[in-house]
Amino acid sequence: MGDALNAGYRYLEVKCLGCETHQTVALDIVRRPKWTPVHELERYMRCKDCSRRSGHPFKRSHLVALRTNKISAMNPPSVWWPGER
Image (cartoon, rainbow, N blue to C red):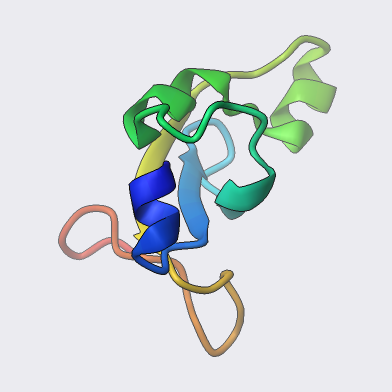
């Protein structure tokens, strides 16, 4: 995580497998030690919308990309697989 922050990647893009939404998580507010590998964060990611619907923490998310900026109209989500948007 520390290496990603030092390289200018401030956000982690995550895709929920339940509702297919892409979200960004700010790496500088994640409550883990800076030496934690980015791929280990995947097991802690939860989709708020799917968790509310199912009534328990919904943990089926995948890491998509490290990003320098948040998802917006000017900066669309990353392509996860070829041809997907």
